[in-house]
Amino acid sequence: MTTYEFPQDFIWGASTAAFQIEGAWDEDGKGESIWDRFNHQPYRILNGATADIACDHYHHMPDDVALLQALGVNSYRFSISWPRILPLGTGAVEPRGLDFYDRLVDRLLAADILPMVTLNHWDFPQALQERGGWPNRDSAGWFTDYAATVFERLADRVAYWATHNEPFVVAFSGYGQGGFAPGVASMPQALKAVHHQLLAHGRTVELFRQSGYAGQIGIALNLAPFLPKTERAEDIAAAKRMEMLMNGIFLDPVFKGAYPQGLVTWMGEMWPDYPTEDLTTISQPIDFLGINFYFAQIVSFAAHGLLKLNSEQYVDPGWGITDKGWGVCPSQLTALLNHLKQDYGNPPMFITENGICLGDTKDEHGLIDDQVRINYLRAHFQAAYRALAQGANLRGYYVWSLMDNFEWSDGYNQRFGLVHVDFDDPKRKRTPKASFDWYRDLIENNAVSP
Ligand code: IFM
Image (tube, rainbow, N blue to C red; front, side, top):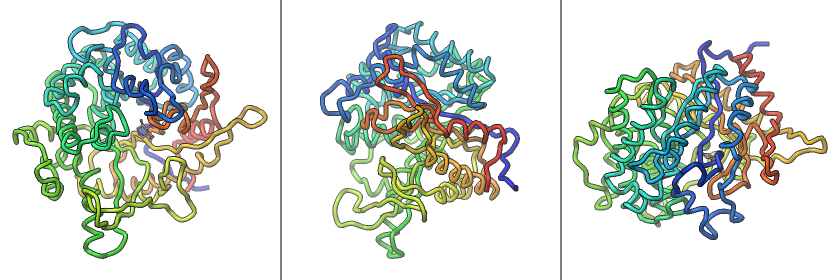
């Protein structure tokens, strides 16, 4: 049988994030993050769930590395909790926090697994929130100092660094709409949060280059195609607005040194002021673009709301909508990668996240036969392969997620893992699902069936 074979040096990985798996929220001197504060407030999270223990990865880290080794990945993407390193966000360093990640990196390397480290996967220090958070321009300096501390300890051994994970979500869910920590609902604040995360990114890349570290550095963005519902000019313009708000607002300054003018004009007086030199800093060349892909949307003009649009999920024939409300559309992953190839200079790219949430209940033998996840992943790997075959500079693929975890405002209701975690068990028993075995075989063959 013919297969779609990936390049020999292709990276196959799995992703997690500190807040979603670690637990130990106040242990070993860790400071409070905005998500600790948020998930301890009533009615913020489904069923009142908290990540105080989550997967208890902080105490099960060696077992989790053993799972990665059994899976056969050649890279693991995880994030560092900023307040575990700097409990107040700046100033005194907590050595026990750094030691934890140091041990993790060494264990991964001993297992022949390259670390990809994300510096900001949303768990911003609460102490810095009280000093204004991301909308305060000082946040760019706070972040760069934190990055310097982490680089000094780990950059001799880490292959890949991502400055931010999905800065869109931080800005627009955290500060724009308020459904995520820190729970602020203000578009001007959200736009400042965008700019300062980007400035922090640029300054960190600059620092990384000046220090001469051997690894590669990039950023992980959640990107999606936005298709106009009809050929009417107002629908086309609405889709373009959505595209600029989610994709262009990060891609354009990083790759082209300018924000999308159409968006700046649309936002008018809400658009923040900043020195023009910021864009030079933000557009420092990066080594790779991380892409978190989950959905695409069909957009039409609407008479109401700031952006004057309605959007619905795009669903490929034969697929449906997940519990998360996201339409399954592998065809749009190929389209997205081709768009990045054509319009952004085909940078080295990794899919830094892709996966599906399912109910994932155990059968009478205690097994989780998640065939839907297998079908989903197969279709997305095929879609990635098609883009690769058409010339997209795709270097690797990280499945979200290694294990079921704390899915932010959805608590533990949505399971994304290749490994099932029993959240009722004090030991958080891990059980690999059928998709784990399937992915292991795929990695071994370095190929997916067409
Ligand atoms: O769990 C999240 C992750 O933290 C960021 N990207 C999307 C995932 C699924 O919602």
